[in-house]
Image (cartoon, rainbow, N blue to C red; front, side, top):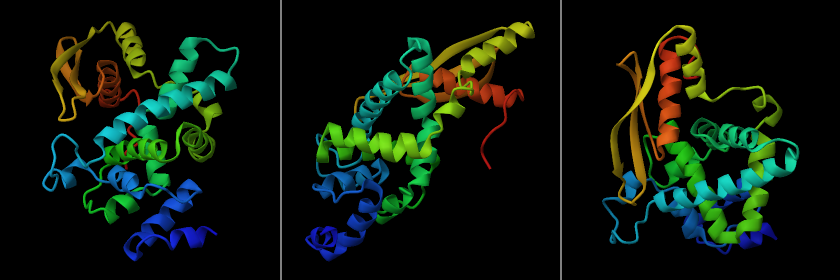
Length: 246
């Protein structure tokens, strides 16, 4: 039956659909959504005919980010009925932060689709962003309930060890503050730039200062997230934590 559905697609799309089916567990209905999810802005900018309706994955990324937060929040709310808001917020951050999404996208081999759509230089950040866009495409294709099922069964239960995450401290800002207090240092943060991207999303570039001197910088779509990223880099810089790269 599945093979029969896949045969409805033109020959050039059959491999794309087969690979999607392996991950999704169902045959996609609106294939163009998934093609858009795997089209990075660097590929669509030159060929886009309309600036008002961009053909890259940034808008889907925005949508997928919100859906991931919503589904993960409900999942944790039900899994930990006696835990407070602070615990739930920290756990959600650990589960859907940029590093976690990068790793999940790599495990799912989403780079295969990026390459099929023309990407040649694929960074880790691109992988995580693509996963969010992928979730956005699933939502628009089959609705919230099936997307929720995909996130829980294909992502949270398959690639995330929540029991391990319970013991992991990923609040890098608090770790840096603890270090500064123990060593009689002063930690502060400075907004180096604040602007909006082409799709009207806010972007912050933050520097973390140790005794007034810049130690590390980072960018993200929220000030809080950028501060966490900068703090992580600072902790690596001073040898408190190790880098997972390489």
